[in-house]
Amino acid sequence: DIICTVNLQHNCMDSKCIMLAHHTTHQERVLPTQTKPIIHHKETPNYFLNTFFIHNYAFICTAL
Image: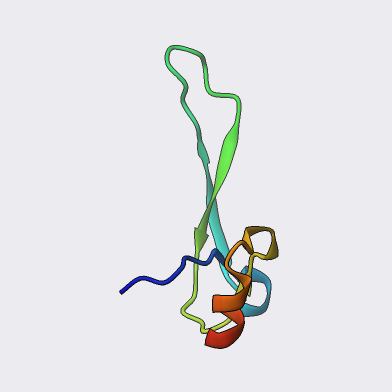
């Protein structure tokens, strides 16, 4: 049974993830001016718990 949800963020800084390239983003017929980085994420057990998403505080504390 699902008791609650949590929001975890990958820790790229400590995991030493690598930026491979930039990809231009297209929006309809407009010429692309914005780029978006392409990241190679490394496997890691390290994550950040997003504390702005703590409506289930009691459940999360018992799980940790």
